Length: 284
Image (cartoon, rainbow, N blue to C red; front, side):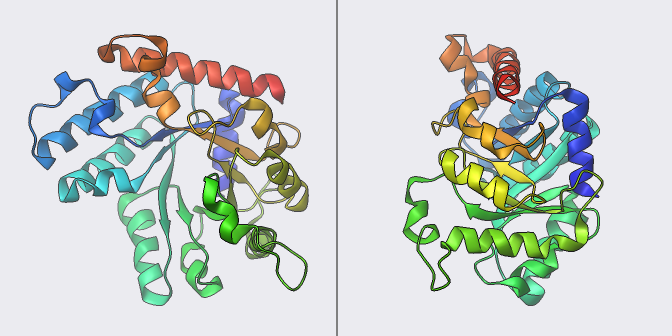
C-alpha cells in the first residue's frame, strides 16, 4: 500500500512534511546557471534539486516536484524532472508528482502509466472534475493519488464552495466521492490510496473534512509562503497521522528569509525544514 509506505516514513522521521521542488531559475544561485538555453537551465535546476535532496533526505519523508516548473523548459526540463525523481528515490524519499492530471479513457491511462510506470513516482495529484471515469485509470496497485478537494488558492471558493441541491458544498461532495473511491484500498493505518488535496489556508474546512473523511489521507498545501501556519494545519491530523504538509518556496528560498548568501541555500533549506517539522509537531 503506497500510503502505508509514506506513513511509515513519516513515523520513522517523526515528520509529517513534504518538501516541494518547484524551482524557478530566479530561486537558484546565479553562479549555477551557465547559459540561457533550456538545457543549461535544466542542468542547473537538477543540480539545485540534488543539493536540496542531499540536505533534506534524512529529515523529510517525501518530496513533491511540480511538473509545470520542469515542462517550462521543454524536453530538457522534463528530463530534469525524471532525474530529480530518480535521485530522490535513490535517497529513500517518497515522491509525489504534482501534475494535477485530468482526462478520461486512454488519455488518463497514458498519464497514469507515464507517471507511475515510466517515471516511477509513488503518487500523483489528480483533478477529478470529469468524474470517476477520469479517475479510475489512476487508481492502480501500490500507487497513491491526491484528488483536488478544497484547494489553497484564493479563488477556490468560486466553484468549490457552491451549494448543491443535496445541501452539500461542491468540495464536500468531492470529498465524499474521494472517500468512496478509496474504500477498496484502505491500508494498515486506516487510510486509503485515494487521498485529498486540502489547503492549509482554510483551516476550518480542513478540520471539518478530517472528521468527515476519516480514512482519507490529506496532502496539505498552503503552509508558509501562502500564509498557512502550524495551527492551521493541525486540524488535518488525528492522533498525529492523516496528512502530509507541503512547503515549497518556504524551503527552497529559505536563504532569502534567513539573510544568507544564495550559495548557502541548502544549509538554509535544512534549517527551515527542521523548524517547520518542530513547529508542526508541537501542535500535534
